[in-house]
Length: 105
Image 1 (tube, helix red, strand yellow):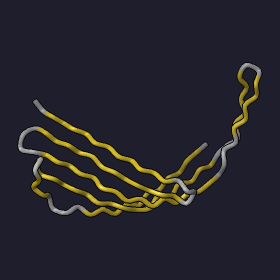
Image 2: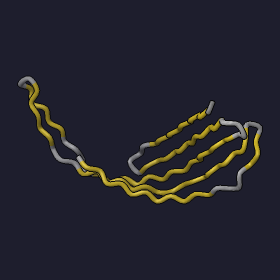
Image 3: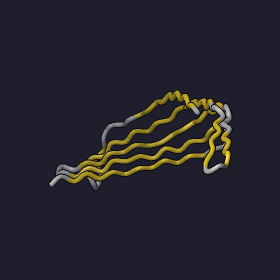
Image 4: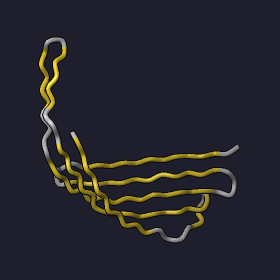
């Protein structure tokens, strides 16, 4: 099975802001993604049992939008993360989120 993916993204990053937990940088983004799935039929035998896998050829378009952020203070603490939501033409809805903390000592 093979997948081809193309992604177009636009983003906007306003000036950094001073917040209670440090300087905050934000990036808002959105875009369109195209995915093409091209499969080959696979047949295997396990312990005398034949297994068949049939992959479908399909193309999906997905719209997405999200926000990335970074907070850093004058010490050595940095918190970064983001969230992205999307929906595609095959009816799938996705939500991806991540957070990372870095502390130097």
